[in-house]
Image (cartoon, rainbow, N blue to C red):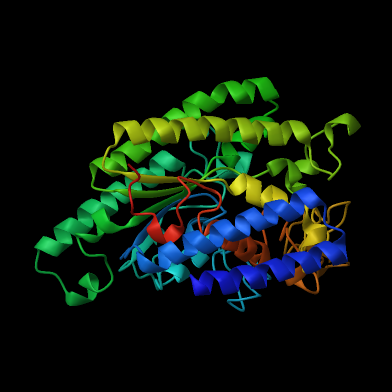
Length: 409
């Protein structure tokens, strides 16, 4: 236990320094200690019994899209990708996403988007997520609604076809070049299946002028469709599932700027309480859905990850994190209270006397920002969130990412 003891002592000294420098309340101090101790113990266990995932298959929206929407509708232009990839890389972020850090943790390459025809390598997984995706299909086009036509059921169709074609290629005499770019047949049952989707189902309802009650009433049907996809993947051999709940979208500029709210609906951190309550209701029902899936899928290891709590803590307690500033303000955008304009986004330009002028510029230092473009998180925020969830401190069951293949009895 010496390694744990050393890390705990080091961590406690940091937290105590934070308490002194930032006047951290006693309750928050104790919470930090509990999480620190839990992380140390769980981390030690994980280092002894890591899962050996040969591949990752991801389903989701822009929180984990590594190039799907860009391949289908045109590249997310600069300054997206500038902090890590030094240019556009299909991500609506200045750099890496949580799914990228998940891949890194298993020493796997970043996931290629299934829809990307050029430069893709699916040897160790594929990414079916696209920005703007919902669980339940939308009845409007991308141009009309801003939401992707690649809803979760479509992503499932794509995965199903991908799986079938890989099996066919593996049993036929085909050029070795193709075989070197696809997973092995047995990798589908040994892979990690990750999900981060659902937020757009809630905001789509609000943007369509549905009441909060009406959006709440749609949640059981939305999650019924989510459950169907998990079962279908299980029936094709999938066994390890890592499922993120939805984040506090009531703290995001694109919602704060576009939705009419009263002063009484805004909490002391500047977030819209009723919208975050809707997210928490969705997460409650999602947790119940995961519990039901565990009962019906006895060979599955399903981990539910409380992303909401981590992101809300980051936003509302940013003053306690020495790096971050301006929790509700977009790093890359133009104008307004939140540096967000639905008509002139990150990288947006306007014409002045016939000359295009870039106005949707990135902030000087994205590493100090939580929000990237009014909708998505910065690479620095994504890394911070990943660091909190990787050890299982916000998971049910409370196991780390490295043990996500282990079914709890």
